[in-house]
Image (cartoon, rainbow, N blue to C red; front, side, top):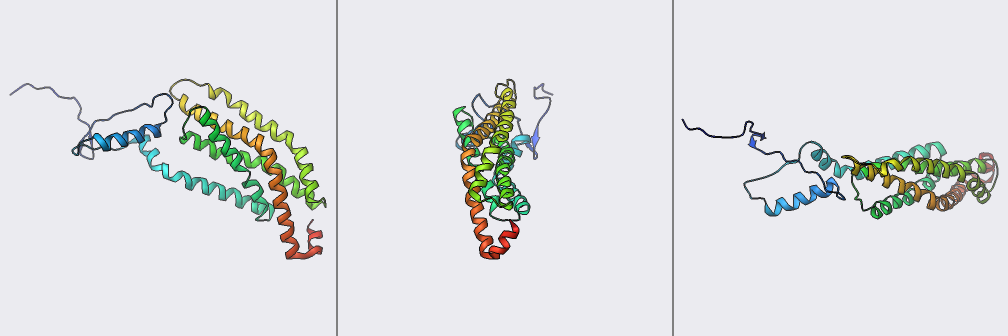
Amino acid sequence: LEQAYGPEVVNRYNLYNAAKINVTPAKGYSTGDVMKKIEELTSEKLPASLSYEWTSMSLEEKNSGGDTIIVFIIIILLVYFILASQYESFLLPLAVMLSLPVGIFGVFAAINLAGLDNNIYVQIGIIMLIGLLAKNAILIVEFVAQKRRSGLNAFDAVLEASALRIRPIIMTSLAFTVGLVPLMFAEGSSAQGNHSVSIGTAGGMVGGIVLGIFVIPVMAYIFQMLHDKYNLERYGDKEIEEKN
């Protein structure tokens, strides 16, 4: 017999000897950045006899990375068809949907200014913003539709809707943004995620307020006119008067 020393536990992964390595991103880097860098380094320097696999949350993040675009598309389609059924029109919901890009622009502007990356937390914030920004647009578009049904012309309806709805839009949006401020200054192990979701969402909401108050009325007027023109061609003057 010969005395020898070895580990108390031998870790295996798929029947192969394995070593579990945990990596914590440095400040200013996301988990996606670290995973991408690890993949680059292992492909360059890891010998052919060794390999690696992602596990746990890293595996989930890797697998779900390609599903993000699909999730966004499904959400946008759901919002569109719900609005289409509400307005009984395929044109009026476009006034709401086309107002969303201004908020998305605000998200990426905010995270770039803060030195953050487009990680999973930012993407969750974008999904949340789709509903919040759509709500702001609905306040104006719905009011315009109501005024059109009461007989007011499209231009005056948009002006009145913009004047009456601007205050509740700004109040609710600013209240939501102020509620995110504590997360912007969070510290600890989850600080990176808190900063990403709060700064990204707040930037999108502010962008939705500043740019949306100009974009939404224009979109509402354009698509209300297209909606009226379509109904005029389809039903005629008498039918339009009855519907309005």
